Image 1 (tube, rainbow, N blue to C red):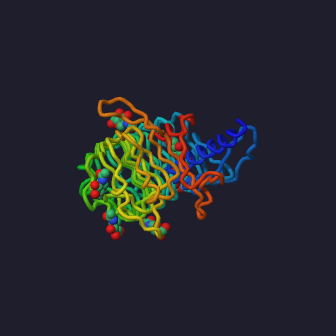
Image 2 (cartoon, rainbow, N blue to C red):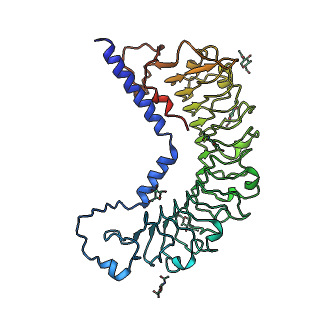
Image 3 (cartoon, rainbow, N blue to C red):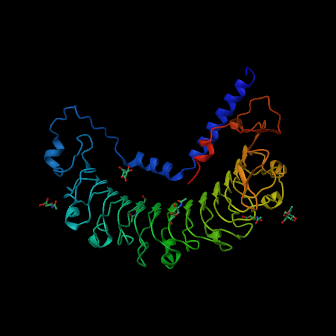
Length: 419
Ligand SMILES: *[C@@H]1O[C@H](CO)[C@@H](O)[C@H](O)[C@H]1NC(C)=O
Ligand SMILES: *[C@@H]1O[C@H](CO)[C@@H](O)[C@H](O)[C@H]1NC(C)=O
Ligand SMILES: *[C@@H]1O[C@H](CO)[C@@H](O)[C@H](O)[C@H]1NC(C)=O
Ligand SMILES: *[C@@H]1O[C@H](CO)[C@@H](O)[C@H](O)[C@H]1NC(C)=O
Ligand SMILES: *[C@@H]1O[C@H](CO)[C@@H](O)[C@H](O)[C@H]1NC(C)=O
Ligand SMILES: *[C@@H]1O[C@H](CO)[C@@H](O)[C@H](O)[C@H]1NC(C)=O
């Protein structure tokens, strides 16, 4: 035990570290945090503190149902109040928080004077599309962020102000989109439409490419049967998981050269062109829970590859890596291949082509008759003393090609990657 102790600690440390790497993959959370830092005033309300009668409250006003913190007089907090209507928003207010209420309608008179609004949070309400007064948002020419997630919208809100940068519409019932609804949104960087009822037909001819600054598009948990057409070339993060997409047209991604991360788990991908993901900026690729039978070409900058729950019987490394260029090593560090039909571990040639690989997660494999089988190794980790990668957790004892089996590691380590 005296000898094993430090090893276990090291493995634990490794587990935590790789887990953390995965955590950083939650790009929309990172993204949210960033924006919250920018927009969300860090206000902490202490009940026992005697807030003096604020000067601004007198002169500028605050809706009686809401609270305008004296030190952030341009913010109005009306969340969690069982409100059924939107209070009248005074003209100096820049942020209004109305989430977690019972609001059904967005009425023009509430916003009549609110021309300085930059952010509206109306998430977790009961808003239906026909109850949004026409043009109520479009008039707010300073609006940057609009939260409408967790409502009952059936239609994409239209029109919207051209100033808008972030639009959150997840968890609605949106199945309709006006032809020119997206045209003016030139400053939009983030559009979240996950958990709606959109299909690819609805997105056709909608000029998504006109959102020429769009960096993140979330379309997860919709009803897409094919890839969304005509996306803007500025896109860096594309989330399409849990749709019914079965193929990707050749050259689809040639219009998306900046793509950093692509999430397509829980679809029906089957036959895809072998070099379809040849994208020079791609870092994260998740095609787990599909029907893939074969591996594909791995672009040089890809770091994390998720292939679990597919139909792969044999991973042909030559396809992933047709040639090894010692001057331009691939960056792949992590592969997940559990719940496939592998009969043996991937050829060790993979370490020649992808010298940065830290671990390959084999987990359980399925045999052709549906039974689960274990390969000799569940997790294959590799330690190497690569001088230029100090974060490789090299303990200085392991040889360059040392392999390890870890059976008794934290089961949540990989389990938590389900999404
Ligand atoms: C808008 O501002 C005008 C003038 O300051 C005021 O008379 C009116 O009541 C305000 N309307 C609303 C809906 O706040
Ligand atoms: C808006 O409301 C959501 C709840 O749906 C909350 O998670 C989010 O932090 C709110 N945004 C801001 C900036 O307050
Ligand atoms: C878009 O953003 C740029 C840079 O922040 C700004 O100058 C421009 O006015 C914005 N456009 C609109 C329509 O608000
Ligand atoms: C995928 O969507 C279906 C509904 O369309 C839902 O029942 C299922 O739980 C979702 N699966 C995942 C993994 O999100
Ligand atoms: C990948 O794309 C590059 C150009 O971006 C090209 O030179 C290379 O041949 C492609 N590789 C494959 C396997 O398609
Ligand atoms: C792997 O793929 C290459 C190139 O497509 C092919 O020549 C080779 O026969 C394949 N090897 C196996 C074992 O399938």
